[in-house]
Amino acid sequence: MDKRPLWARMDAATRQGAGVVAGTEVPAEPGVFALYRHGEAVFLGRAPADGGLRERVYDRHLATGPDLTASAFRRNVATRLKVADVEEVRSRPLTSDEVSRVNRWVAGCDVAWLTCADDDEAATLEHELKAEFRPPLTKR
Image (cartoon, rainbow, N blue to C red; front, side, top):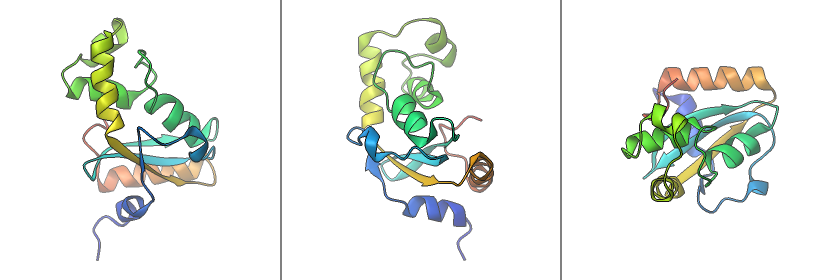
């Protein structure tokens, strides 16, 4: 029996390249999403009904602009790459080279999601997935 049945479900979901997925391909419904790097989950997040997966995944986490403050994922990537720590990301503009390093790393990821009927279902699923396994860039 699989010790991580919910992650088995997430891992089986269709994955799309973070650098090529179109916003219109990401559903506007609430849900839970995971970002993968080299086949391994590195981040897990939840999208509420207000804005849904499209706003949370595409507009925030896959954005390529210089402002990383709206994305815990991009901030944590910057920290992982030793571009800047979380406080620096929040307090100073990153250089174009620093932003490019983060964007290249993110573009090398894949994204998958599971839609949910409502916010409560999404929150429960996220909590249960984190109980099974918390990816390394998921801090909370």
